[in-house]
Amino acid sequence: MTKSNFIIAAVFATVVAVLLWWFSDTQVIKRKTHALAETASVARADGKGARALKTKDLAGLLSNEVIGSVEVSRLSDSFSKDEMLSAHHMLVHNCRSASAIFSDMEIEIDDETGTSATVTASLDLLVTDTRGEEYKESCLASLTWKKNDQDQWSLHRIQIHQQ
Image (cartoon, rainbow, N blue to C red; front, side, top):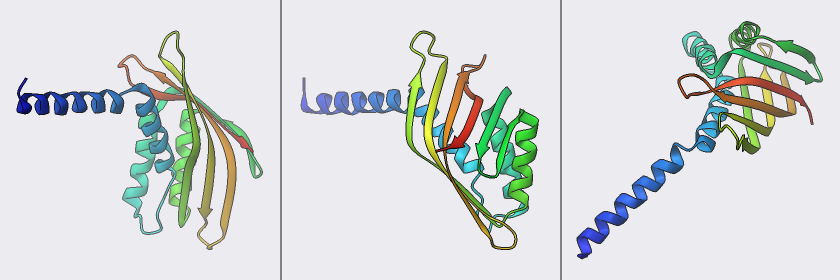
């Protein structure tokens, strides 16, 4: 094997390995989970259009059957998809800024079917209201992602509770 053929084979093998890693279920779920946090993060400079697009982005991550439950200091309730989208719309349009950050993420994919995954993570929330008051919450999040008929991962359950 010539030196140039060896280099081409090594580059090809590296590209294939990176693509297999990038499109692995674990990496896709990790990116979607970070995208979920991004939909709840609003910069003070974001206009109404950018804020509305965040609700559209959130809708694209949720399955039609999604169920959410929240049990934190100021809120304890369950939500359907429509209620989540309405609450999200109200939040992003009625705050100066907001941020959501997942950390210490653990992803467990169902070995039998490979069509269900559970993500557990710490979730730090910070919202600044229109008066400038800040509200902080450190929570634990449990997310259940499932593959839909198009083989795409969508969020089926989200549970947020006190640490």
